[in-house]
Each structure stands twice: as C-alpha cells, then as structure tokens.
Image 1 (cartoon, helix red, strand yellow):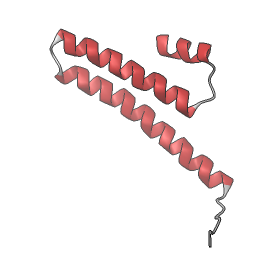
Image 2 (cartoon, helix red, strand yellow; image 1 turned 30 degrees about the horizontal axis):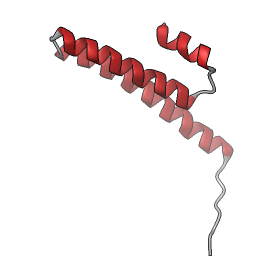
Image 3 (tube, one colour; image 1 turned 180 degrees about the horizontal axis):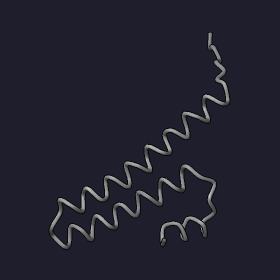
Image 4 (tube, one colour; image 1 turned 180 degrees about the vertical axis):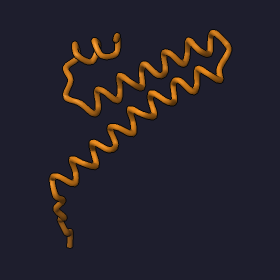
Length: 76
C-alpha cells in the first residue's frame, strides 16, 4: 500500500531557501576560486562560458523569472 506523507510548508520553504543560498554561494566562490588557479586564456574563456551557463540554468530552475528577466540577470 502506498503511503502519502505531508510536510509542513514552512519546513519545505526553509529547505528550498537554504538550497538556493548554497547554490548561489557555490557559484560565486567556485568561479572566483577557479579563476585564481587557472592561467590559460582559453581555459578562462571556457570557464566564463561554463559558469554563465550554470548561473542561467540555476536562475531558470530556481525562480519564476521570465525569459527576458533571465537574459537580463545573466547579462548583468
């Protein structure tokens, strides 16, 4: 028999907020740390493209931003 569990909305909201903050911190610290250790110009260019794509993906998944807002956030 399948049991259905219920979670407190406040607990779920708190967990999502914590995950969002952790992802933002990893994106920020990870990119800065990566640029510190990488010296090759082409590798840095690839890292910029990669970190930008990861940022856009995370904003698109974790928010209800429209396409124009996602583009503006990524461009900023």
